Length: 140
Image 1 (cartoon, rainbow, N blue to C red):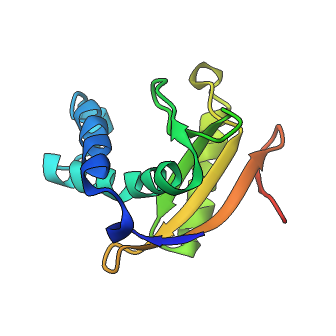
Image 2: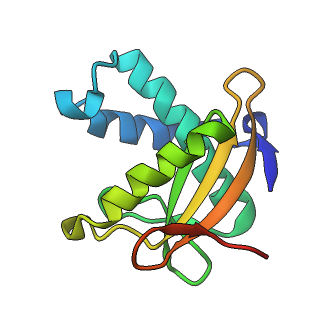
């Protein structure tokens, strides 16, 4: 699964990113030292994969707080984007920690995309399922 962010509906992407950025900007801890501009750029970067799934693969918005998308079976899916394959292990560590915080009701399915901030090219690195202990890459 590959795409370029230029293929996306820009208005839709900006709307989703702006909504997420406004939520983040309400809290200094969520901002993690980033400027409002940096928060918006990070949101655009991450939201591109969600918009792609919605626009081209039949996923829908998951309107619950702190949620990304739902697949065609209406199952909640967490979507992460990182810039290098070598960073995936850190993404997985954060997701393994998050799912153990029961109050979060974290999704048990995870999609990780690699996104190039210069070319705007993205590709699906892997699909992961939680096995009760950690997220494991699915093989197909």
